[in-house]
Image: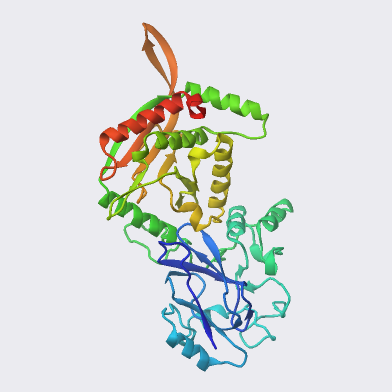
Length: 444
């Protein structure tokens, strides 16, 4: 009996995604657990595994297709001896609606292009000489100007100007991975990618000149990525629906700078704690002290959180993600630092799992490393607060008739007035200021 591979819901809020690439083609045998495709959500690129066994009878959505709804049919798996009638029957009985049907010359025509490899030898329009995929073998699959390559390796190849079709992959099924790119760079194989070559999914996020604006002839249109669309939608909803108000406070951070220096000296170079790590720890402690600020809005009521799950904003190519440091109030400073570094690295590589960037109770956005003095961040619903952290700057103050120098950092708290009132927000900022100006209080 034929079975359908559906677009999975990779997170509770996911409604659609981009089918980045197929790792199988029509005629391939698929076993349960085999990776069949890469799906891009608004936060990461993830692999989709086959649940059932069978032979790929039809790829219903072309690689590079954006906006594929959850539960849409991606492909149909057939049992031995089944044919086109079984494919049609499976599609008619499926709840999802295919975005591109091979019967109409869609996926079948687009996927099986020159350079595609099919099991059982070459046919007209199939693989050319040297592009052979034999049963049981794990060899690289070349599709036109695209190759089987991981998202991280694809980014690295683009940044180094590598001709990826000339690189031999050492990953599963001949897939090009990071170490292959690193090796190619060391061997001096860098070369400018030819005009028109695509590194990655066809048409995804590439500059286009096919929609020139007569008012701006010297411009390039870059289509919105799935991430950018989601960011635009969520931030618009946040500013429209949430009654924001803002409170700012200056924190004297000389004691915190000295504390960080001593902690790092104690490590002898084995670790490096940042100011942001200390801020996250202080944020968590302040949430335990003023726990009513650790809350979120729902239509049924205000939800109060019992742990400080701090979302840390991380800038990545094309957008922003907020991986979560769970139960930060119970973690030591070194563990917080380690987790933030690990989450940030995997966020930039597109390797975060949905549970690693969802479910935070409070957000921290730090632009101090860019020299920004202060700013106002947009709340990330259903959270009720986000802290904007500016850079440290030296100021002169008059104290007891004497001029002294201090290092000051401005913190701005964006608050959902439906959940947190002004007095509570002020108490929270006061508690946070106390922990940052006297870091030793966080170990008491």
